[in-house]
Image (cartoon, rainbow, N blue to C red):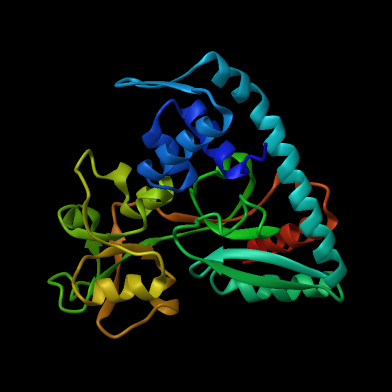
Length: 298
């Protein structure tokens, strides 16, 4: 019997979280889709894996047995996939680097150039991901390393080194009452509708809503977007405002959208990330060193 590893990952998320809601956020799917996946796996195996109740999802005896074996199975598969892809990239001398939005800002091109200098014949191929994939393909092995904003789902399972911090500003429609200000206090934004990333991005979405810095005040969502262009359009159209890195004013300038500094909210962090399996990969290590060295000198 063949089982899709996607179903096993979904099963393991529910087993470890004990909740469909939390597990759905972890694997970036809707709760109904996750429920369907669990039922599909149970049908394939011909037995129940969970006892469902209003308090959550409890493993059956069969579920406990599968939960004990699944992590090792998935780790072995992930290692095999990563090694296969890495071997293919070695032959073409391409290091795939994922990023979301503006990556490491102006430093990105310097990192790429320094990597090429240290690894003659190699090139870093940048791959932009949507906001619904805040690890930029790193968690599923699509890329070898990534330049990311913290925090993001799956971060604890990866190696992460912070490169620098950057102030969070606010992006406003140009006609907004606060657009004429030189600076805005975050408290003045608490009741505003926000343009948000998809709910499945979990902690990453919450960070850009500053959900834990509102003293319990709930967030109003005006629109949900996955790409910078859609995000800018939603703001310019007046569907909401959004927190953004200071550099967005340079990278994502657009008529109808203005950026203003915000006080009373913590900065965002930019990091380089890679898989633990690549700790001994000399090419990945060189790229990480490029990032860290340039961060120290900037």
